Amino acid sequence: MINYVDKIPNNVDLGRDRVLQRALEHWQPAFLNWWEDTGPTESRAYEVYLRTAISVEPDGWAQFGYVRMPEYRWGIFLQPRDEQRQVNFGVHKGEPAWQEVPGEHRSTLRRIIVTQGDTEPASVEQQKMLGLSCPSVYDLRNIFQVNVEEGRHLWAMVYLLHRYFGRDGREEAESLLARRSGDADNPRILGAFNEPTPDWLAFYMFTFFTDRDGKFQLCALAESGFDPLARTCRFMLTEEAHHMFVGETGVTRIIQRTCDVMKENHVEDAPDVRALGVIDLQTIQKYLNFHYSVTLDLYGSDVSSNAANYFTSGLKGRFEETKINDDHLLSDATYPVSEVVGGKIVMKHVPALTALNERLRDDYIREIESGVSRWQRVIDKAGIPFRLTLPHKGFHRAIGNFAGHFISPAGEVLTEEAWKRNQHDWLPSPQDYSYVQSLMSGRVVELGKFAHWIAPPQRGINNNPVNFEYVRFN
Ligand SMILES: [Fe+2]
Ligand SMILES: [Fe+2]
Image 1 (tube, protein in one colour):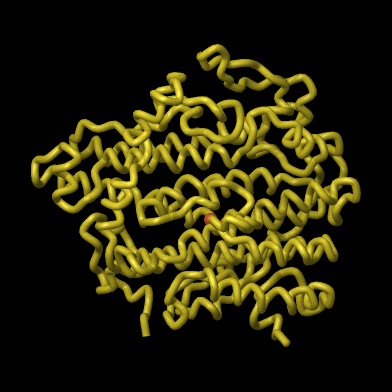
Image 2 (cartoon, protein in one colour):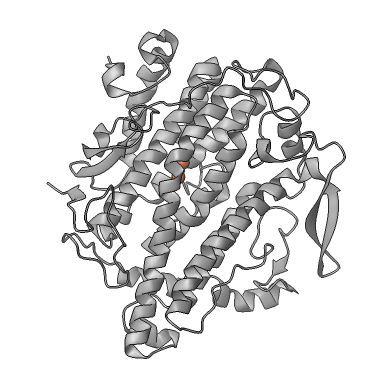
């Protein structure tokens, strides 16, 4: 029997909700087995300096202290309810926000929640082995923080399934623990979550690009007319910011280190840079191209009747829906999408309702662009003539209007043969991956020390010094 108040911090009155308790009695041990099986390898005895959410109050959502990860208190938190909240878009606009699942949208809503929920454990699985090659104790703590919080995000979605979807919800919650990232028979639902995360550059790229897709999806769901979903996602967003911080600063520190070494040694060519044991900027560009393009696919087809349906029925809004100044119905509006016609990329206007995936993707791209320009500043400051660029939206896409076409990073439509001839100039080759792997053959655990290929961070976590004992290995 679980002591709910102590073990599962929550603001959903779990102590008095018998139905939820019974569902969790099954699921919580299964979750721990999943963590044991797929969580960070060899980490069970470590005491890790982690933040835990114990309430939604400003002083409660980030409580820091040493925790053994299997004993992490995965909690259930929703942003407090606003009694006045309405459905803010679609045909139900102006109705009070729904506190129970509207019958006619039940299966759609369940699918949306399962698809979001499936990404959370997937990334933990993808990152399982990385602790063995961490560049510092500081970074090790950060990946563990991301991992336990993705675990909590799974809990958040499972809470909704258990509380609002009865038996089907319980079955879906079990399936969330059964699928495995990259598994041939039972993979995770979305493509990017089945890609391996083989090294720390890939990890930082993933948290910069793919966790940010998470942010935009959560923002769209935080607008939902189904109030418990909206409130759950709002609270998840508080945690997501740290994941993207880990990614952005991780890549910044790698670029910084490379630039420092290039300048000190007066080298510019990739082989010379590699000879000095740091990651050449060309390889960083290729990783960027890969993670950006597979993440763009996560937004789905450019033109989608599902997306239109989610919006019209009030289930999934646009990014910052309530700040947009329009009718929130999109009855007459249009939106530009690209397609490939006769070997050329052309723009066409389609009903905005059907282009909501593309719109969310564009919102995402804008935020990515400013992040990449911050990376560029590090290179510029070092006076190195190299430009990091985002590839064309159509590059290396498997979903939507560009799927099946061969687009170069510059946006030219190529033949398959021409594209393939150049692919290793654009995407990491097996040799690139093995070079990066070769730098990360062991882990750095001496306090305050960092691997040769990455600069230390500007500051530590929670006002602690950079050389703080973020992990006790025992
Ligand atoms: Fe998440
Ligand atoms: Fe995340």
